[in-house]
Image 1 (tube, one colour):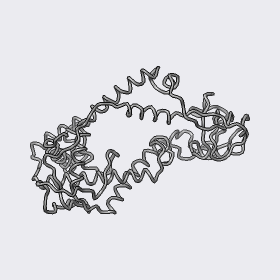
Image 2 (image 1 turned 180 degrees about the vertical axis):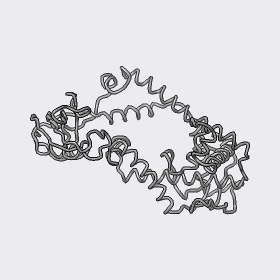
Image 3 (image 1 turned 60 degrees about the vertical axis):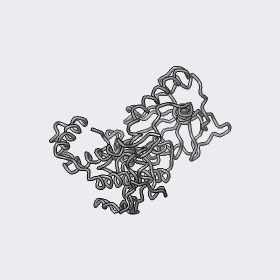
Image 4 (image 1 turned 90 degrees about the vertical axis):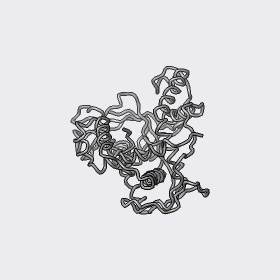
Amino acid sequence: MKKRWILATLLAGALILTGGCGGKKEVETKDTQEQTTEENAEYKSKVVKLGNYKGVEAEAVSTEVTEEEIQAEIDALLAFYPDTQPIEGKTIIEDGDTVHIDFVGKLDGEPFEGGDSQGAGYDLTIGSHSFIDGFEEGLVGKEVGSTYDLNLTFPDPYKKNPDLAGKDVVFEVTVHGIVEYVDAEWTDEFVKKYTEYDSIEAYMEGTRTVLEDEKERNRSSEWEYRVIQAVIEDTEFDCDEEELESLTDNIMQEYEMYASLYGMEMADFLQYYMNGISEEEFRQQARERAEYQLKNQLVIDAIGVAENISVTEEAYQEGLKGLAEQYGAESPEAFEEQYGRETVEAGILYDKTLDFVVDQAVEI
């Protein structure tokens, strides 16, 4: 049993695929539904005219890894681990500066776990809110080459370490320099420092294998996406703006929750884990993905109605058993109790309808 049933029943789940609302091809095929399909009662949005879904043509999925894809991995690695160099003549810290520091945090005069740079040095951008309130602000105006005590209080609550919540601490901070980021060099030394490989040659070979394996694992889901995307592009939709905004909000809230689990603000989470995009850019991506998820569900529902696809009791029990095994549930009954029969049945129906379309699709 495939995991995609969760996407079918929980539309605002993980970010996976992109799309846009309202796009369609002008040329109709003989299989195009001339009438408006039955509206899904769950959504205000609806399919106006269902496009061709039988014998859909889609580009074949290749597992070949190109040099451009490997270079993209290298570029991302270099961007994530830039070098720094001192800014000559700058000795007083200002807001926005990146400073190279060492620090030791003490609670009741004793160092506490996780509060020490251990002499390894740390590059901190003032104003990034990477540290607790008062730490970065306390360095503004300080001078390079000196050591300072910052008397601070941990926030309460403090999810990263609840034992420190609300505690008064002292951070002893040594300022080594004010630096700027520069492009790192792609060398064997860089590879050894930041990857599991010991040379550029080993990295290239290993990365090619990893990407090939990843493409092979994702081949089936990528093919399904291309097929359904082709159906979506040939279909007319009436997308409700409030519904799309609600789905987008759900995606944003999910990632805000992820950020909070890391003890981070959303902006910092996007900086460190989402390639540094802005919240505005991320919301636009979230909206595009919400649009695709909604259209995906609407078009699958419409095809199910058009083809009178249903789930027999025998197929339901077989599917329920498979899902329970796949997700490690105590029993099929326990899985059904957790998600509800209606949700499970909807997911099985989604898979059956998707298979109906994909099985007839043609690679080009």
